[in-house]
Image (cartoon, rainbow, N blue to C red):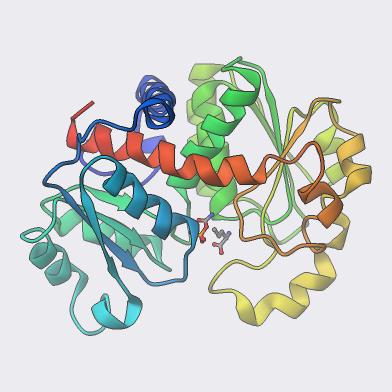
Length: 307
Ligand code: CP
Ligand code: NVA
């Protein structure tokens, strides 16, 4: 496997190994700094959408391990517009050692990987956000250990982040419950893939409408923006549908007493997540954001075969 396009492309064991590696690289980072395992390697980062976490954490992951990163903005590359994706992939393959791409259409990152001679990492598409899913799993493991049977509940829009969280939960044998309003369900293809994985790992997947039912017994409550990048024209309509799915103190009080509250960020405060919860004792949103750095070092190291 040379690319990292989806958590479901890997076996449970491989995902577990990558997470173990992330734990090791994180320890090393805080102890005496990472070994220069990416020396001589450059990551090309193609962005068709804005980013804070993905851009900076990938850049710093490369630098901490002795490598470098190049930011390629939407206007510079014109992926599929100025030049075909196949040509961009083949040209960049001769300049850098690995590519990361954030795209609107998932088919575009798949196309990039098809033509590229170097590994391609999906830095978010309309289908999924696998690097986020790995950092999320690392955050859950740090809090609860990697116990099978943890209850992870997602409340809100069934989107790209939901897909990767569902896939990593299924891979690790965690129970995954989603509550979405009608018309905003999790991608059915992604659900079918998760169900196949869950058969092997014993994970239980549940799809509901009621957020209150979804958080009963939850060890993790997760939410994300009601309007993802590329859906901006739907914002007003979505703002009418989603308020019952807000993660607020009342909802958090209905979960397990040690529940952690997660959000991939950027958050729209007092929409999907109240200030009180985001800055309250159950929130892990900032350690979660910081874990992007460590999880991505593990993804890069695995693709380079250097750890
Ligand atoms: N969570 C996440 O991917 O953040 P950015 O969009 O800022 O990269
Ligand atoms: N679902 C969000 C995630 C942002 C990191 C989006 O796609 O905009």
